[in-house]
Amino acid sequence: MKNKVLLELNNISQAYGDLRVVKHLSLRLARGQIGCLLGPSGCGKTTVLRLIAGFEQLTAGEIRLNGVEVATPAYSLPTEKRRIGMVFQDYALFPHLNVFENTAFGLHQLPKAERSQRAMEMLEVVGLADAAKKYPHELSGGQQQRVAVARALAPSPDLLLLDEPFSNLDSDLRERLSQEIREVLKGQNATAILVTHDQHEAFAMADEIGVMHEGVIQQWDSAYNLYHRPNSRFVADFVGKGVLIDGKVTEPHRVMTDLGGMACDLPQGVAIGQAVDILLRPDDIIHDDASELQASVVHKAFQGADILYTLKLASGRQVLSLVPSHHNHKLGEKIGIRLEIDHVIAFGKA
Image 1 (tube, helix red, strand yellow):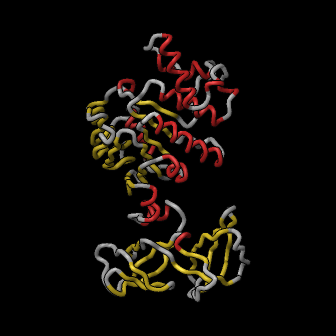
Image 2 (image 1 turned 45 degrees about the vertical axis):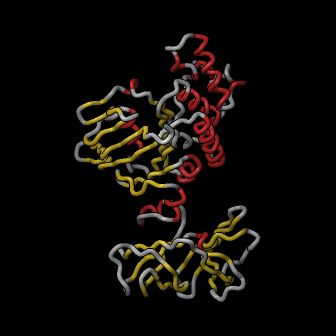
């Protein structure tokens, strides 16, 4: 069953003495899906991965794999019996073994011919069959990480865990490799959980993403919804770029701002006349020479195809706008802008 839940974390917690690292966290991941725990350093995401793997003991809650309980505060199924594969940040390849031997390492239970066939199959999948006789030190960082993925997938684990797998690579390679690894995992119908602090990796790889903060998943959702429909100020700030501008509720589902009035879904408990903060993303503000609404360029960041402009409104407030880079305006220049927002997000004043 493709949509059968493979991984369940039910109200799990973890603490080291008085320090609570994970707090009543729950999630579900269906077979064949790629999930991601995204958050800043110290938010508890790697601890969750270690709890799933069996490297740490729960202080509350339970973990289930394929409907079978594998961890509670009183019980922990040994790691080697959980049918979990692991890909580490530092690749953890054996330097004295060649690529083929590294890939075949977890297949010792198979007859020699089957072990050899499976290892070569996985090297074909990751595009490194021609490098089977090379040693790790002869490979690039990206190639080493692909070998680590092949080794982890070779025993056909029920679940693959990836702990900051691309953090040692440069940004261009990180983005390309994350897309390649997603294709490999999808081709194998693998179920995986990725841990990262890099939202670009999360967006490139995952079907569902949980943004973590202080041991709690703030929002478990698609990349689109995390960006366009964040459920908290933290998620809005952590995912993507944007600014919060002042708004005032003038009627049900409508607010007035320095950029004019707009329809808006209001937070619970916010009434007419109250002040709110409106989230504006750079792609919500469109450059339009024909618009009467003007803003001054106070900063510009060239990004190749686009320029990210920081613009000052007549009120003095600043907003961001992502503009095609052939519109190359000078600092201090006034340009026309207009709003183009499908879904306006408001937060009550803190």
